[in-house]
Image (cartoon, rainbow, N blue to C red; front, side):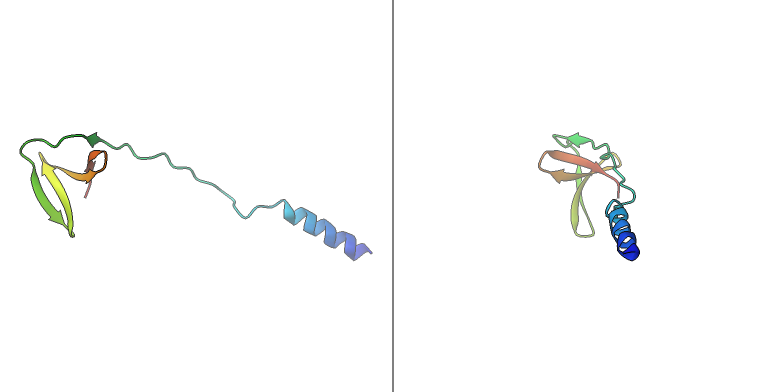
Length: 71
């Protein structure tokens, strides 16, 4: 009987412990979206992907416009 009470107490105690110890929530990075590329842009391919470059910055085409990326 004593073992049964200890077993039930142990099961009860373990049911309140969660496997997730720590949850980390990251804020999204600041993204600069440009609707229209500058006039004198150049098209470059890096690792098979197309990027647009102008004034030392590289842009990637998305649905919402062009996003400045770091490569």
